Length: 497
Image 1 (spheres, rainbow, N blue to C red):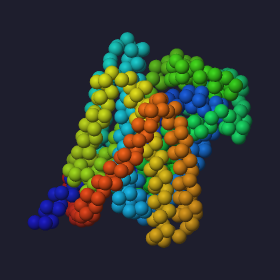
Image 2: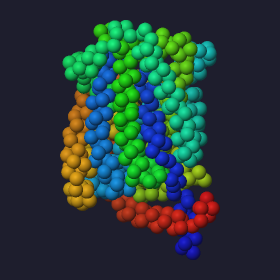
Image 3: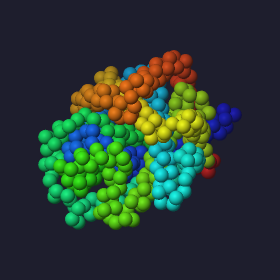
Image 4: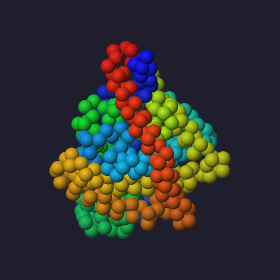
């Protein structure tokens, strides 16, 4: 009787095994980082308010720091089951309460960024329909449709989602690379190709490099989500580290090259002036206008469509991330066990529906109050998400150091001491930059910025308090789950649904 009961429960909570490989996970990460969105959405304001023509190497600097973090991060995933993302690692290093706090902060991070993305894709699509077809559709109506589309895709198995994301990411990278080829091969470099004008130390330190670093961080996070697919990955102990390193290296080099292409197009001495003018009128035009000039008039509408698909790809990626956090937290007893149920696709279907409702409840008040989604929803919640995420980077770095100091599971000092501590210091520096310049990042006044930033410690305190209620439940729930899954995997495939 016990075995029957166990085997009927297990398929409801087990994710699909061996479903994704290295490049599937890489594309999940790249879609979350949304290269086209990053270029169009960040370049004008980062160049105008940051370090001008010296902005391109900022991505290299941030990428190197993320690689420093990744050394300890991927080392620890070899010893600690990481399907709970940050929370699994923090719990192993700093204890159960700290792990629960990090889980709630991760939910805050990705839910905030996802809600911001819903606002951005809704406004972008509404504007595109008006400009190219003369159709006026309110942004909130587009939000409702997008919400349903993302839910449908998110309820399918992870491999299907990966296939969709591969196509969408490939298309946006293709048009950006075509633009770069046109600039460097054609006669579209306003002042010629001057590498030193962007990549010298003097160029990087021009203006406000701290603000530039802050915006680079905002367009590069997401690589840490590789660990969330460990339970569904083929040979996870090799797949996850490889996907992490490839993701960080590829996106940092890609964004560096593409932003430099924009600088070359305008000319190093003129690009800051063009960016300042753009942020006062049409920030997206800072990139879409050069696309049309280099590739032809067809490029602007195509880029607009690809910008929408880029945002949809990012939404699907964040939807998957949140689903897996909810699924993991439910398995561990931090959230109701019902959220751990999976559907016939062996995807976390219950979590998908619950987080869709939460996204609806987050975004709808902005529509009901008549607030502009770009100046409030997108700015406020994306800023909140970035601040919470960098906080998690700092805490996770300390947890990695603490774990290896206590367990001696890996005795390589470079991987377990030097890099985690260096990461903690560097990420703390990034966090300080974000806090000091948060009004710029979130496009908010100082008072509003303080309120938004205050949400991070409030969620941490609530998570700490809730951890006291769920400690015993978590241990029992995870033990039961592992027993049930092990029993289910001993059954023939056709009996496991």
